[in-house]
Length: 183
Image (cartoon, rainbow, N blue to C red; front, side, top):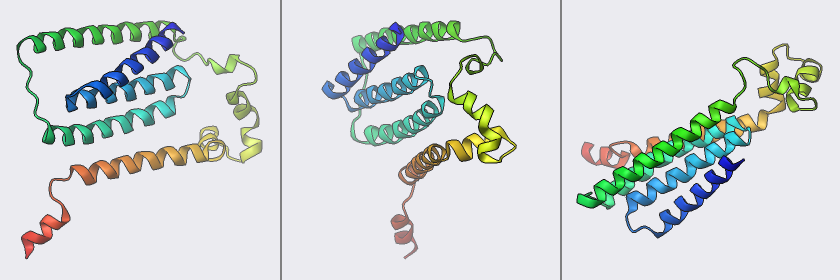
């Protein structure tokens, strides 16, 4: 639980830096750190599907924002700032490494069904009533297409919208430029 609160404090600090910094690229990177922190929070809250969606949207959003930022704000790192940035980066990577080791140490043995031991969980209801409720012989299909259909549809919609948005922004030539060159 302490790791959860440390992650929350990290996200708040990154948000303050993103708002207060004058450098656009640093601000975008801090916003990305907030998003990746949010995806880790979803993992702690036992929502890996939402965490995966958050990571995909965050990566595509960062690509778009970095492309927009680099064209507007040229930053050059010199001297002391380069050393400070390297030290801060190494410290952050070390903290992330420690957090990862801590998370992997608390995971159950591979293949051990954690939710099968807990009575009253959603997974127990899916296993016991899946065939009777949905009529689908495949339990995974019944979960995704019956029990969690709206959630799955929402996640797929977010992913497709993010990909289409990134494609529209990152394409090299717009339709207007192509039409102007033909005339």
